[in-house]
Length: 308
Image (cartoon, rainbow, N blue to C red; front, side, top):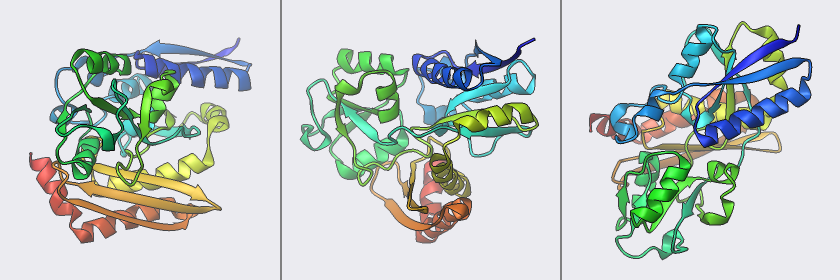
């Protein structure tokens, strides 16, 4: 009898694209197994009329998928790594981090604007406090508006609600086949990405040795080491995806380079630093970078943000 692994997934178009990509890869590499999907709604899918920062973000897009694994309704879950909290429930682990797509933020504008070309006071949409803070640091004149919903909903709102531009993650836009609508890839010098942005992560039970062996075939070591450093940085700062924290790791010639940032909500205070070291020390590098920013005053900024 063929062994079946059940994949838990959200039912948004992007989540299904990512799950289908994982399923097809695994099926081609492991033809003796059967891979099926189970669609599950998360809290973040139900609450669409409130800014993410106001609801909190601890497992907003992952908790229900994790419960299904812990109750043996599913065997694995496919996530966008930027949605995965740095502390996982006991008994679960990240079985694989797949090769990362471009991690950058991008501009989509119905008028073809780039950031520098937006008119004074332009209406810009994003659901991310991290993006908002960095955009306001770069262009304090911009009018930033909350923009929630899946990618197609945000694109519809861009047209319907007369936005001059919206800011999204490059990876999602490209995976949905909308790359031709991108007017600018934002330099990380202007907008440092979210931790894990652009990478697909696969979570499973940590005692499922058979499945862990299967998932290891999709592991990308460069992506894992870079994102381990980013997540260690975020974890030390005790931040989440709705705190203005950005980080980007990259591997070059076996050296890990890591940039990190903490910003105030209004973008007036931005603390940024970087370091490099051996990729084998990814977690330590992330913690060291967090310590460096804390010494620069990041703790006070984060306290202000959490107190809002």
